[in-house]
Length: 96
Image (tube, rainbow, N blue to C red):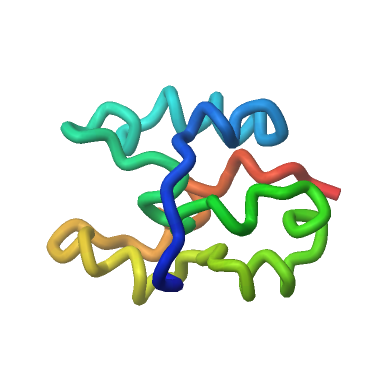
C-alpha cells in the first residue's frame, strides 16, 4: 500500500459500490473479528475515493487502490486457498 494514506471506512464506499458493499457485508470478511473491510484488501481510500479518480483505474491505482491478486490473498489465506476464491469474492462485479 502507498504510504501516507488514511482509511475512510467501508460506509464511505457503499454509496457508489452498493452491490459490492452488500456482497461484502453478507460475507465472511465482514463477519471476521475485527472485520476485513474494503480497505483491508483495496488499501486506504483517502486519495482514490474521489469520483474522478475512481473512474480512471490507472489514476486510482496511482492514488493507492490495490487490486488484490492471488499472491496478495494468500498472505492471509495460507492454508485454505483455492483459486476459485477470487472468483467467488468478486462475483458481485457488475457484468458488462
